[in-house]
Image (tube, rainbow, N blue to C red; front, side):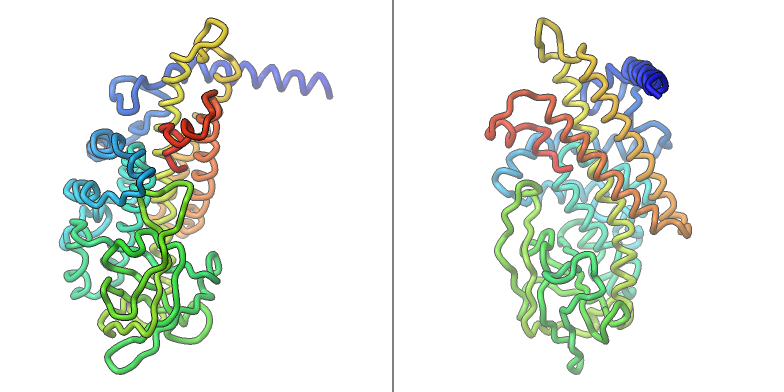
Length: 395
């Protein structure tokens, strides 16, 4: 037994050591396009996808990364920067082109969100939610609703928020209790939503509410515009990160909205919400990939310049092994995310399960990467941690 364990350890040591030699050095800069690497996110992409990715990387480098720390520390919702992103087609990436969208695939979308997240994962995560809302209107709304809302959402002239979670219903979304009572040509809304990204700062709220009996078949989807009487917002939540997107409760008190704001039919809301979240899971997983990728590259550069005992930390075998494990997790996560995105685009039967797996695996692995990257830096003071580029990359 002891001999078997010893052989396993030797085998693992040689395997990981060889892997480290193959993977280190990696890129010398976050957006290098000249050095081939085992974590290069452009590997396997088509020429068109590489162009989308290059555009997103450039925008992240020039328009997001320089401001990321300030946005987080001062809790700035970077509206104008996001509108610049929309000019590149990132406001409605998988919305159809006839209403202003880019009409790209789910894999294309994942590639773009990963690249944007190297500049600011928090802001990109909101952009991904906005994209999900625009797609839900495009996919399930009437032609009139598509024409009315999607062009302004795709240009980010208007911003959208997704309203599903309630104080008493998180994972059990079918138990939501916000009500919509029919009264002539209006629905009267009462209830509240919790932890809504963009809440209070956005213009359009894609709301899941109860128009019928208990359970998923009693849920409908309504659009509520900011400024509607009876719509109000809670205080901005205090968070340890993701401060470039405001988070508030959204409150409805006898809030009347036209029946024409119903998306689909009464009772379709839960299905619409779940269809949106399938893509949303891939989107958020992709944001985690970008944060982890950028952090690994920053860490790799740091290990080259930081010296201890007269040698760069990059020569330390323990840190080489640790970096190799983080790189393995990132590459595996990217593969499962892109596989899920392809399955969703193709409408495969396993798509829903794969989307859930992708979010679970990618966010966990990328969190591990970020934690590992941060732990390689010995300058652990509260002020330093808050201003560290890795710390300000939410995983």
